[in-house]
Image 1 (cartoon, rainbow, N blue to C red):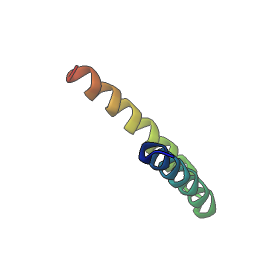
Image 2 (cartoon, rainbow, N blue to C red):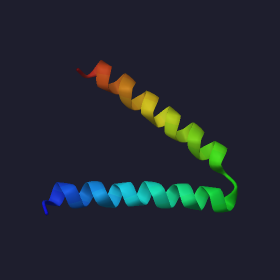
Image 3 (cartoon, helix red, strand yellow):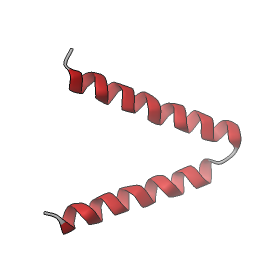
Image 4 (cartoon, one colour):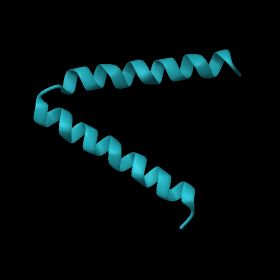
Length: 50
């Protein structure tokens, strides 16, 4: 197993654990909003520095 595959797996697990934690705390809406904002920012920066 390569280091990139392990890294991808760990980041995926962290994302799932964050979702579970948000559900437990009742802050799903805030998490979804931040995730959408982050994806939008990433796309915008990607286009800017193409």
